[in-house]
Amino acid sequence: MEEIKKNEALVEVVDVQFRPGQKIYYFDPAGKTYHTGDRVIMDTARGPEYGICTGGNHTISVKEVVAPLRPVLRLANKQDEEAVARNLETEKRAYAICMEKIVEMELDMQLVSAECAFDGSKILFFFTADERVDFRELVKSLASAFHTRIELRQIGVRDKARMVGGLGICGRPFCCATFLDDFQPVSIKMAKTQSLSLNPTKISGTCGRLMCCLKYEQDAYEDLIKNSPKVDSFVDTPQGRGTIVELNLLRQKVKVRLEENPETLAVFGNDEIAVFRSGKAKKTDPPIPEDWAPISGGKSSRRLEPLDKPFAFEPVRLRSELPAEEEPEEKTEQRQGNNARRRKKGKPAGEKPQQEKPQQEKTQQETAQEPKPEGTEGGKPKGKPHYHRRRRPGKKAE
Image 1 (spheres, rainbow, N blue to C red):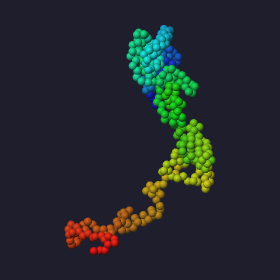
Image 2: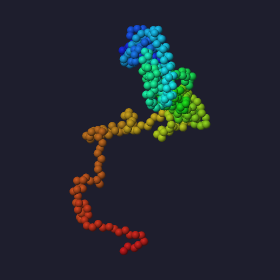
Image 3: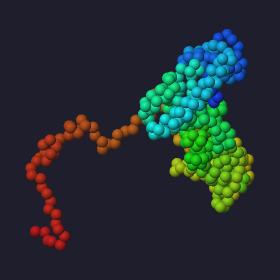
Image 4: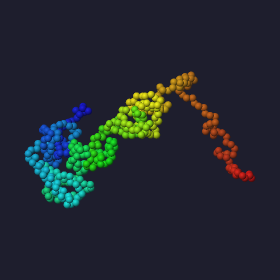
């Protein structure tokens, strides 16, 4: 991997964040050196923007860059800082006015925030809504109040949680507002894999969606499952044979219901048991010997050492599947003797003698040459067919 990375094309970039908690973007330093914490002005698709440098000059692979890579224009000066302060005051006033107009027009939408462009050319409002909202009258009213371009953008509840911020059920700040750059899909299957309660209130975040932490903990649980037996597996333990009823993936332990005493539940480590059958029993599974107990010791067998790998029965092989060296010696000698006798008679070795046909069988040609019995034509008897009348019981024959 290191050799591949050395051969890849690299490009020098700096990490810039427009607002705290938002996504980090790559920009071209344009031959200048920037440090973490510097206030910079970048060239963007919306024009010059103000941002904070979160990572100084460093190199990354060209594949990680989203073209086109826009440059950093310069460091922010005092005038830029004053413009940013004025924009913050405009945003607060715009948020309050927009909330009042939403209530007046009775629109079914929740305003999240208002952002003003660095040059003051437009104001962008973010909102959430369950359904589509007709906000054309709201845009006209806001444009007459601020005399600038107005944009309204609908976002999801996860984006709202990132922008607003807060504390999760763990007591720490939201992952999306601190270190997560992108939202990755999270499914209910991940909660099942991690043996979590499927209660929505326990596996959902403040935004109402499944917690993002389920995603980046999934890989660790998948590795633990590979080294753990399944529930309902039949195993042998130091206290006897039994069935697994519960798994503890993080501690790598299992809870077993013992066969001799079903009311007893014992806890063992994964390295203390031997698996006879993985998972629930199937109809095709071979029977497990009653005296087979490699860890606890069977009734008629002495104590054995623990197995290094799960117990498995060797499948029975058919005679046609046996290799040549496993063929019985007696049959090999008999076959060699038969081949020698055939060579003396002038027959090729290994050829089977042809079986004589029984005398009763006749070829089609012999059957055609035989004379037909009298009174038949084409193999069928001549004249009227004669039927024998069946005599009913209890009546005399006429």
